[in-house]
Image (cartoon, rainbow, N blue to C red; front, side):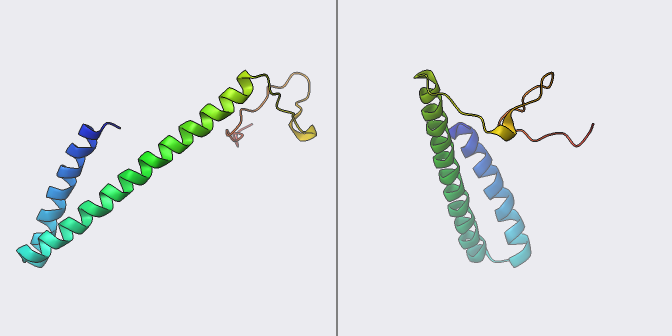
Amino acid sequence: MSFLLFLRGLIGVLVAFAIASYAITQSAWTTFVQTLICAIIIQVGYFIAILFMVWRSSATNNRGKGLARGENIVASSKEIQPKGETAQLPGVGRSPLP
């Protein structure tokens, strides 16, 4: 998500939150403080999401580099598929349907 898209969404959410907060409390000061707290919480969440995406991409790159060097992934006996069946993709669960 780009920062400009996030900023537009942040401003829209904060305006809607401020209107709702003012309608409930009828106090400009309380509305300002609550909206400021809401803005901080949203920005912390955005920062954590960006850190997670960077961590996930570095983990994916490290795994890809290991495979590019020729490291083999040894399959356990449970993962060996009978002849004629397709292998299950990693991280993808089986369908409950037959």
